[in-house]
Image (cartoon, rainbow, N blue to C red; front, side, top):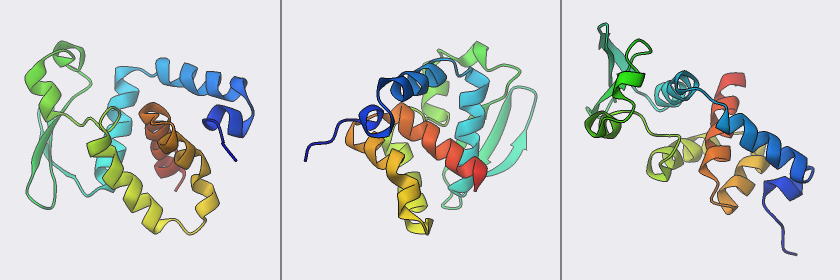
Length: 138
């Protein structure tokens, strides 16, 4: 049987519209905080910060820079900062290791149904939002 994207699986177009509305209304600060939550779950540790940046390091030695709230808008379109900031919200390469870790640790597979359908629909925004919510309540 062919299943539609999460909107049809869960409760029709209303739920899908709500999810899209929530994603479109997220502020840069909410995206930054969600990405920081995911990064911490993945083992990144904040090593230092100043008025403009927070510096994070992954246990494997990879360094990463996350813009602070104070200057976030200033660097929002700066390509160098874009490459050096957390991009879990728009890169499957970044988000999938986190999804894999959640899948391995989850004891109730049905809790991941919404995530499964987001993956089937190639909907990174819904998948990202699911991951952030999952980590927040876990």
